[in-house]
Image 1 (tube, helix red, strand yellow):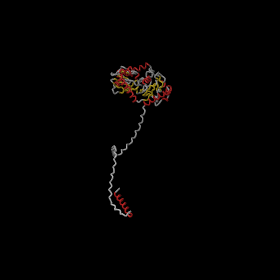
Image 2: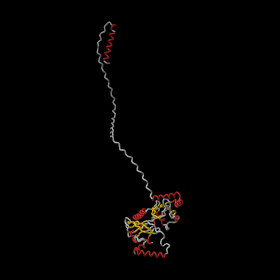
Image 3: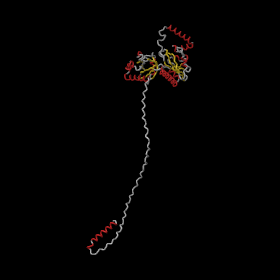
Image 4: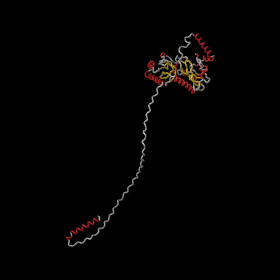
Length: 384
């Protein structure tokens, strides 16, 4: 209680006593005012603090640096897509291969008889391409549009048509190419033709297309290059044996091989030339073609001259590629001109009269070109 409260309480009691004093005769003594003792302040007990574990210090995260404002990147232009290139146009080789593949597919679906009948007809001709089919078992020509009279005939070894035996010889399952003179089925004219021969199920399926002179020339070079490669790989003896056989022929292409001393080592068409000097060979027109071929270098030379075709035996303009390698001359060529037309001069002639004319022609050559030139000519195949 506060002192002010106590003081007011004492004053109130004294006033009450005065008010009641009339009933008591003895006067009440004056109350002595006593100071109320100062109240003693009771000390407030401080609460005992409860010990609590200090919290684990929390690592204050390092604020990420505020990235500096950068300029917006320049917009990247969207590249314009490259136009799809047009497919390369098909070559004549591509078209011929597709034609032969189509014929084989027709055969697989329809059988042999239907295939023979179809490709013997005009319907079997496509873009100047005609199919040839030869049975390899019995060497029978089943289809040949250019010469239909030969269909069903034997065309194997020792026949009058060695070209078909050569076709059988070069055919493979993957297909093999050769270049030869042939008949264009559209124009009916003879021309250089590039031939594909594919062996399938015992049959040779073959077709050809017109060959440009440039293409034929490159084919001749390739043929000669393969002969050089065979020599490098297998040696001289194996090369001579191979190129003296008709197995080495590819259409009109055949190789003649000349030794370091300019002596013939191989010639599959005119083997009687083997052992003779090529420099002695003179054309029917007096051209010293043998000496020109003997000038062949490592870079190769082209020589043009008249020469009998291996099939017709008639003279045609021949273009020969000759290259000297390891001292040897490797040479082959193609026939560019048209063959001589008409039958040979001796056919149907009186033997006595023809013989007289033949001897007089020899005398004229002797008087015109001299003895050695005449001997060279009549010792060569050109005089046949």
